[in-house]
Image (cartoon, rainbow, N blue to C red; front, side, top):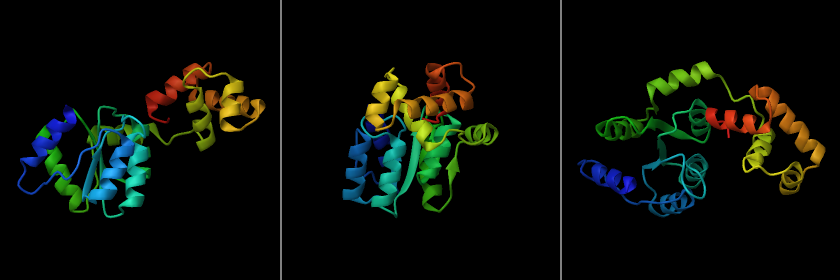
Length: 190
C-alpha cells in the first residue's frame, strides 16, 4: 500500500516517471536490471534480500542508477552500511512527502542527500566495531541457534564460533550473545 502511494505521489511530479515497482529486495534488483532507472528507491526492511544488499547489487548491475534508501529505521549503522553499498541518499519516512521529489532531483544532480539528524547521530556513533566475521556469526545467532548449529551453518569449528561471539559480546559491551545481538541490531550493525 505504501509503495503504491509513493509511486502515485511521485507520478504526479511532471519530471518524474515511475518505471517499476518491486515488493522484495530480490525483485528490486530484477526490476532495476530490466528497466535501468535513473533512481531506485528502496527500504531497508524488505522481504528476501534486504534493501542494503539490494542497493549493492543494483549498483553493480546498473552502475548509472542512483540508489536512495527511504526507511523508518534511522540507525547510524544502517546509514553507514547503505553508503558503503553505494546509496546516494538515506532518508527517513517521517520526512514530508514533498521532500522526497526534491531529494530525487538533488541526487540526479549529483548530490548526496542524508537526513541531517541521522547524519549527526552517525558521526557521533563512530564506526561499526564488529568485523565482518563477527557480524556473520552474530547474525547467525539471531534466531537463538546453538553454537553447534552456527558452526555447522558457517562451516566453522565450535571453538571459533565461541571466540567470535566472545569478541562481539566484548565489543558491544553486552553481557551475553542475546544482548550482543540486540545491541548490534539497535545500532544497525547487523
